[in-house]
Image 1 (tube, one colour):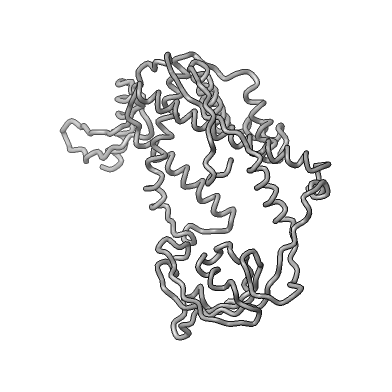
Image 2: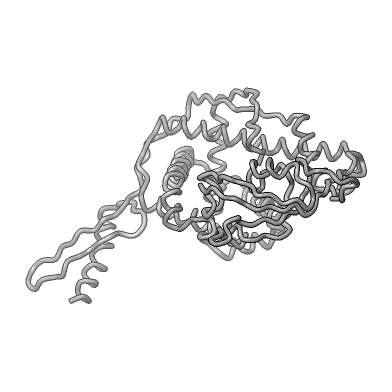
Length: 378
């Protein structure tokens, strides 16, 4: 009977879908009953369909674009970090207590030797910059003032959101011995420092490169802010439901992307306290927004009869060539051998083109803005 049921479903379901002319998403879901002798046979199937998105009015869009400018102070901060990265450590010329900015070597262990916390079992010659808060800021405060060879017991309270689960929310006593103090010697901020980076002839060229890099990041941030405004304005004009199966596919893609990023760093999900299930919950909302934006751009692209610009693919291959370190011909050959990937790339490029088309029809006012100092340019 199972073979009979499968045959009935496989023959009738495609015909029924063709007759309804539904624009379905994903695979139909059906739980057909067992057929009974000398009786007609029917069953129900559940399908999701692409949303029927109404015409999108693109007239009268008014947007405000933030304009960020890299400041001299930011250039100086970047140069300070470069100097620090090029510095070298040297021993103290005269004995003195440890102070903020020193690089120290310490040995530490949990004062509770009968039941020590794993992360606080004896650690030899741990290197850190005093004042960096590498363990905790209050830890640095209590180490400052110690002399080489000195040992003391340091009480610490770790916050509830501390990165190590075993330490989060714990109150502990740590025995610390200061083994060495070294000073960081910075190179002079001059043309020679710039030349050490290879492609710069003098300090001014290095400063200009830093400024351009910062500005590129700010420009991308400004475009992202503009895009967010645009989507918000469009969804105030048109709204629709997003097919669940499309959101599930997007969530699965995001999870795979997160897994690849962790694998690249030789880290597992368990190491950072994550699982596929927790990520699925976390990504549900952003995945829904992403799918909704894709559907909206597809609708507007068709509505406005947009086609992919000539040369867009070649430009994409060239851009990928720079970021991936492979020739544009190699990348082009890869896509030409995989029709599905090629169509996906074309779709992505057309959506980007559609987004620029919409912005070209909007009235955009530029407004100077101060960047968030806690967020570095991308």
